[in-house]
Length: 347
Image (cartoon, rainbow, N blue to C red):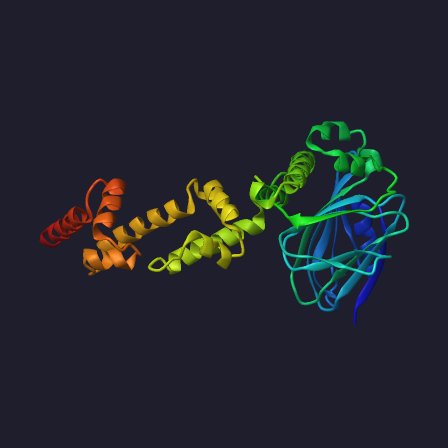
């Protein structure tokens, strides 16, 4: 049976306290943090709030529920602006008076602003890990800080942050970047205590916000002209690397490799250049030569067999590539290996 919570959408800390009170569980407060654990009859895990200056807060969610949960965030004074990063299983988000919920998948982020007549509604599934990180911004209090971010914004974002009374709905969803993922991890892994912890984490929140604004502007470009590498794209690039590793003997053209992992060719090429400082074909070529070197060292295959084993159809071309990388031909390298092994046996 689905559990339902109706919580006043105030600052991050008050939302966590409101959830704890509705669930009839205790919460703990410590400096700028507030946290409660889910009772065993509902599930496991926790919800934690971090409160900073100028109306800026964070809600961290990490739990697994036994039954589905619907959470309605009712207007307190004005709905905080929410920038949500979904780190695990998909959830659903919608506005209360709309007919449609939107699925927020793993590694997607959501910028959402509700109005006084249209509350946020979240549907959380059961029996899957839910892990989210949400920036909560009281735009009226944050107005004093907004000038620092104006150079990073376009007209739509300026209007969003200037809407201190929450008159307009706003909805944006896309995959978030590797940089943002890294900053979230650094925020959560902070080892400082007390004042130093608050200062460190507050700085990370501003890094996350700044990069999110840059990503929003980047998303206005055509997909093949975007500069920022998304976390989900990285996973697909890693999938392409795994295919190269497992199917080196018959790895296909770049365009077909891109299709297999769900990317266009330009995105795959740009991703390899950012992650590995090389093109896809250069990566494959280099990997083939490295694999061949390992086979020369650790197998009984001859040079011709190794040439075909790593997906190169010309022994002379293979010899050229190998010498370029290692300074000797495959034949010379193999002789060196055998001489070295013979010396070890007679020693």
